[in-house]
Length: 166
Image 1 (cartoon, rainbow, N blue to C red):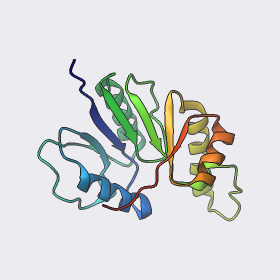
Image 2 (cartoon, one colour; image 1 turned 90 degrees about the horizontal axis):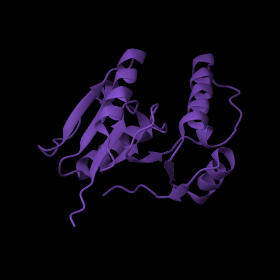
Image 3 (cartoon, rainbow, N blue to C red; image 1 turned 60 degrees about the vertical axis):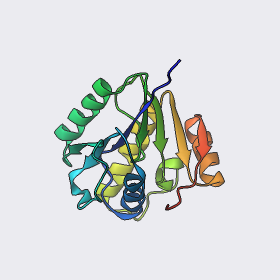
Image 4 (cartoon, one colour; image 1 turned 90 degrees about the vertical axis):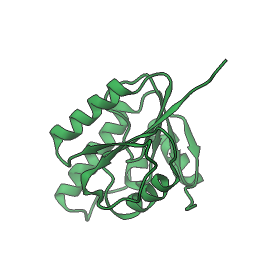
């Protein structure tokens, strides 16, 4: 019996900082027929294997919604989806889903005092998104302490998977 699984990386909102650095490392390691959703603000990316299909996501609500819809249509039970931007898919999908959670302000109920209004609002919406849509997904984190926070806050499967450069 042949077992075939395809990887889809959903990183439609990753474009700067540590997330960008980790994503570039991940992209460098790909070889095959992966499909990758990338934020257009990511900038220059390394030369990728010819089998990798890039799906561009503009940083606006319409483009992100359309990307979520494309992900829903694309992902089958033969896929594994890695959501690399802290958030699970908006729509229920048939694939096995992993959410790589890096933002400690999302893993716990830490105070948002001192953040600009726009940042507070975004973090509140992202916390709600996690609470509502983290169904049938395994959360991947880098540390034991973050795993404990996620298990307490979201009552979900969580695995520790440090991300190290190649």
